[in-house]
Length: 460
Ligand code: TRP
Image (cartoon, rainbow, N blue to C red; front, side, top):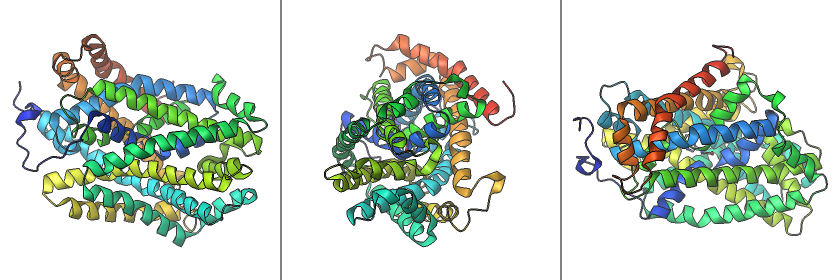
């Protein structure tokens, strides 16, 4: 074994590391990172803006063909290194270049949080509005415009949405997060199903279903392909070391491929369910599917409005969306905190407070870009859209290429197969050799082409 790749058991990490208590807990926490605003807010918005079912199809191809192999690689790199996103590459990789993957991940975490906390803040405020009767069904459009258009209240809700995951991360990865997320995920699923059934019973629901599931392939373009790929990375929390960091807390007996498969399947189901809850309502109530970021906020209150106990369901829906968003934000805050805590030796508390301070600062231009700064457009995008674009469509895919290249080239096929099969005890060697081959050639080449094509550097 080369000297830079010590097996995890002989790690001389001076900081005692935490670990997930159970195998199910590890799956649920990884799922807690994956499931978030990406499913409930971003997926429907992008499906609506990019032509419906054709985009859904592309997204599914990206998730299965690129997302799953990269997720396996990322979790495995973390588990083997037992370290944060930057130190992992310092431990496992020859040369210094590889740690740029981790550094770009820490930067991506801050950029994502800048706009993610903004949307999470809207969700928190909608839960509050639902509770206090502030979501009149016939004014959902106006209520949304008012929510994003008020700079002061946007920022207050945003900071609240940032404070919650920061506190959880400071408290540690231990049983707290694991237990809370394990209880709440089934509740979110149940509510999405109720919401879906309710939406399907609306008059005109079939039009929404056709939009979601009957593809019109003429809608596909280079940008649409890049958007689908970017969403796959964003959805599965890939390409910036979040899954790597969580993998570092997983036990040597955990099945990494099994965990990855469960996360991918469950996460995709949640997105599709959210689509089923939202699109029938879009058509039934005559909204435009291209509405974008407001789609969730205008449709859901309308879906529940006329139903018995509608206000209760709307309230529960936004509370659970807030919970899902918070689970995702925990992993976004954890990446820089684990890095700072382990490399600078700062306490989790000090690392958490500094991380949150930087995120809060970068969150200001995102929050204000839907109101007073809406006309400031570097590169033709508002700050909100710019942060979203740079992270999802550039930093995450580039990080994904790095992770694939690392697992495919720095790790030999033997080393990769041995470690993801838990030293041969999992009997998945054939499949895992194929995945190693994918990571070595197909994944980096495909992601590079989609990236260059989507950004306009090459034309296919
Ligand atoms: N996957 C989450 C969602 O869909 C967002 C998220 C959490 C994320 N951690 C991440 C995205 C790390 C990219 C990288 O809402």
